[in-house]
Every structure is written in C-alpha cells, then in structure tokens.
Image (cartoon, rainbow, N blue to C red):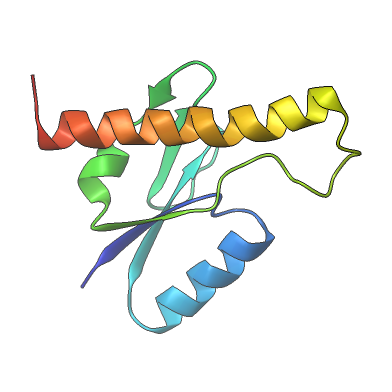
Length: 106
C-alpha cells in the first residue's frame, strides 16, 4: 500500500483528495504549518524558517503538492504577487532539499 503525503492537505482541494485516496485504501499524511495538529501522519513544516519534519519524507512513497498562498484571497498587488510566488518557490525548494538529503545522505 502506498503512503501518500499531501502538502496543503488541510485545504479545500487537499481534504477532498485525502478522502478519495483513503476510500481507495491508501495511507495519507499531510505536511502542515500547525504544530498542534494531532492527526495521524501529520508532519510539521515551515518553509519560511526552513523547517520540515524528516519523518514526512521517510513516510512518503508519493507526494502531492498543493501548497501555496491562496490566489483568490486578495487583490494581486505587488506585495500579494510576491507572497504567491514566495510561498510556492520557498516550499518547493524546502521539499526538494529534504528529499535530496533523504535520498543522498551526506
């Protein structure tokens, strides 16, 4: 059985994807920015601080990436565009670096 890690797994789309996957027998886990999340297979991360729970990468056979600033939450002024871009680039880089370290330990 595959373990599927979902970034953004507590959002609207992520929640529905989790339900569908679990109904088909997959184990799901989430990367979340909430330290107090007590759900099973919930792993903490904070891309702005460069923090990710190493156990998340060990858990994952597959990663579904849904993280990023909500694009419909606010008007796209210069500051909002920066937040949208940084939320995606920063979190992708952190995830990439964590996977790379897991696959090729120093």
